[in-house]
Image (cartoon, rainbow, N blue to C red; front, side, top):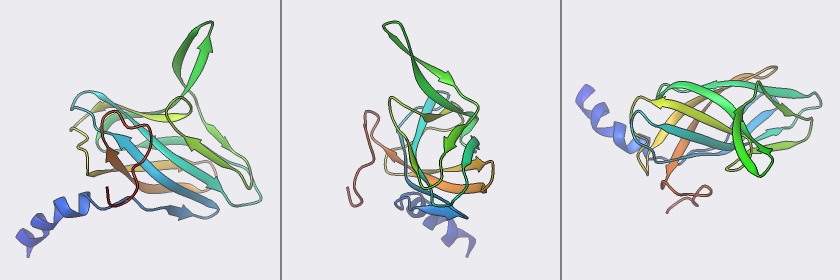
Length: 151
């Protein structure tokens, strides 16, 4: 039985990432790009606050990264720089998209490679909603967004 579970593990890693909801917070389209071990990855997703009260994304973690930080891009003159932020505000009834060029999650010090076609676990921490577990679908290294299911 244990051997059978080990044989199924790679297939489970390749399953598409689905939306997750906890309380009023719904997370959809979680994805990342392929990256090498010891490098840095980035996590992208959409967060909808379906409630009447504001909430905030205050942190994240993943067993595949030494550190996970929330980042944004800030323009300094003619240069666009990434900077860590303490939180992302989630207004009631609003959706915030973490995407390339905007808010995103940095997966720093990858303990293993992020392999295209697989998924990696990520825990999001919210001020009100608590923790939500999602799976980031690993897209090709240069991807600009999640690929449709079946590709």
